[in-house]
Amino acid sequence: MHTILKRIYTLTRIAVSGPGSWYAILLYAVVLGFQFAEVWVSVKLIAWSKSFFDALENRDASLALVEIGNFAVLIGASAGFHLAGDWLRKRLFLFLRQRLTENVQNAWLANKSYWHLRPGFTSRPVDNPDQRIAEDCRQFVNRLLIETLDLTSNIVALASYVAVLWSLSSFPLEFSLLGQDIVIHRYMVWAAFVYVALSIVITDRLGRPIKGLVFAQERWEANFRHALIQVREGADEIAQASGEKAERRRLEARFGAIRGNWFRLINAELLLGLFVRPYMQTVLRIPTFLALPAFFAGNLTLGGLMQLAGAFSRVSTTLSWFIFSYRDLAEFAAVAERLDLLLKATRDPFPAPQAPRAIKRTASDDARLRVSGLTLTTPQGDPLDPVPDLDMKPGETVWVKGRSGIGKSTLLTALSGVWPYGKGEIQVPEGKLLALPQVPRVFPGGLAQSLTYPDAPEDFDLALIEQVFVKVGLAHRLEALKKPSEESFAGLSIGERQRLALARILFARPDILILDEATSALDGSSETEVLSLLRRECPKAIVICAAHRPPDALGTFKVLSLGHGSRVSDPWDRTSETRTDHSPKTGHPA
Image (cartoon, rainbow, N blue to C red):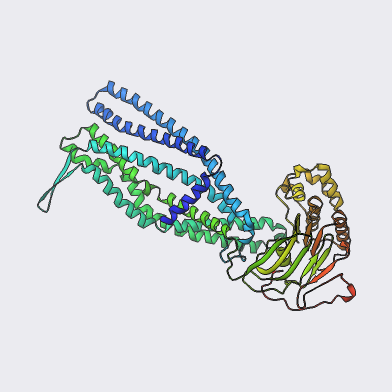
């Protein structure tokens, strides 16, 4: 329980703190005030029930009509308080959800945690962070407001209802047990607490497994949604391979996990419901049964009986908040745990203890890029072949070559400042760095956004964007610039995507350019055309290019060969090129 409360406190502090926190606190206080007003109406309704039923018992029609009018006024006030409080609570919900979501997503994006927390890069990967940010933040804030407001108002209501019940139950309960006369004064008050306390113990015992099952259900649901997204994103490959049966099997397996956990969850809820449902049905009748001895003894009128039963019911239902909310509280605890685990993981995004993280990355003071004593490892700690020392000045190009699986992409990822595993030193000059992968991403904002990313396309003149499209051979795609994002990507080939990514260089004007098979889908003449354009437009850029064929269009270049006898040759001489054919080492990244 201490751990759960600590998680809830931490997340609540994140949601409330920051600019505008006074607004959230003030709004919460106003909503709480409306709930207290509803409690006041409930106390008035307890008193009203005595007057109304006494009027019925005395067959006083005029007084009954007056009480009906009073009832309408009280119900109208209660409805007004409830609706006003609910509307303000929903405003507060959006404010807190936005604040919590921004903080969690910022933590996920900071220090490239989203990259490091993937499966295979950490000993404890975070599953479905998208769902935790989108859904769990929403559920947490919703449950936080509902449960804390209800709990606070119920504490105040309990004090009010107990005071009323105490004043009404002035008569004792007298009976004999084993020859002893027993008298319990104000027994209706004690009966309410004992009755609910026993029920809470039973509820907690029966419902304990639900929290873990709710946690698991959220994970399986998110896994299924992710599998569906993968089908949509891989539609071309699946269709060309006629892989519908394989995808169906994969989706059925994911849904099978949902189904299995769902049956375990509903069985646990059924076991809990076998107690909670009868309890909910009887909690409003038990007080009447308990007060019958006083009624038959002549200590209560019918109105007094109904008033006492109403007060007892209010006390017992208020005390039963834990019982009625058990399922929601279990979901609240599970959501808080999922968010807390994500935040803890983002604070240490490199949790692979077996892999060294001793790459020293510093800024060079002479605009040169240097690599010295660099040895990279896998996240499991397996060393890759040592990287030869490298020294590059502005305007130079290096071609990184080697067999597949030797670690070319890993080296480029380390040079871009992302790969943390290994040891050695990388000196990087100040300026802008741009890295382009083999399979470029098209960004949700459309073709123009994909061209100017990470800058907004609105920051550039449309004529300039169109001019760049023409330069990189995408003139036939100009009309797509005006279409919605999903439509603008339709039919975009890998080669066109690579041209689009290469065009980003003309906007970014990087000082360091890293190309990882960025032209692999282009034919030789197209590659020459595009790379020549890039070198003309960015003559001072340091270019590191990993490819299976030499980037002749970039001009004179060094060659960094990875593998046995890793070395740097300067400049590259075709006649001296040697090829090796060694078996790749297991576990080396490409």
